[in-house]
Length: 259
Ligand code: NAP
Image 1: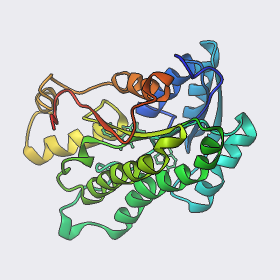
Image 2 (image 1 turned 180 degrees about the vertical axis):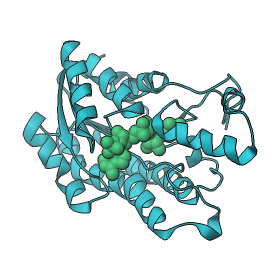
Image 3 (image 1 turned 120 degrees about the vertical axis):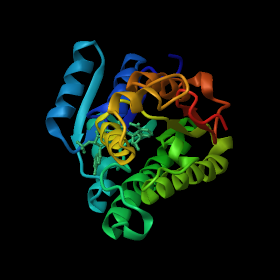
Image 4 (image 1 turned 180 degrees about the horizontal axis):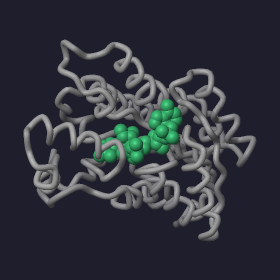
């Protein structure tokens, strides 16, 4: 893909799910990928897969709920691969980890969700932006959610963090628009991943519905998406073809949200 050969891409939450698919797709498009998450064997499997396919990738273990580890991630990535040209803020804490009605919401889960889903993208974008501005080329792609546009029931923290990150990315996009750096969000609907498996089980149980029937009716198109439905948008947004696309939040959701 034009503009991506040799670019260094940091993908958080690249061990599985949507992040893994984005890491693989960016590597196929010519990026050298730094895959970051906590689970070492998942990261190793992603790097092995990319290497076997002829691409380049390195793994960095990081716990993004630990502020000190977040702050040093860009410099660790740069030491392994070079300064970051493409930042993919994908790691996230789902609404499924501890869903509760608002009045019973656990403050600890609120703090964790806001930290990983909103503050980490803020910090990583801030830390990687100087290099992008200096070379007058950069891409920030944040995986938000349709719940950045509409609420997730019993998911106050998830909903607030995803609404917040869309606003944050638009504010940054406006500031850097004339300097060669684009900043966009992708808003997936329900995607078959570990995080969403837990969510749909919670909803099926809550509604007393058969899981398969519930899943099939999740989107107007029918059923759930797969991570590979999301990855091509990330590659497009990273490419030179998308140089005039910034400050946007792109739904990929099987028609769930048509706003
Ligand atoms: P997933 O399969 O559970 O993957 C989540 C990734 O984030 C994993 O690689 C996980 O790795 C990483 N992660 C979580 N906490 C982390 C931490 N503290 N430090 C470092 N890495 C961490 O979930 P997914 O569905 O692909 O989610 C990816 C993104 O898509 C999230 O931002 C999510 O909100 C968003 N999204 C998902 C859906 C969906 O339906 N699946 C819909 C809309 C938006 P470790 O556990 O190894 O750290």
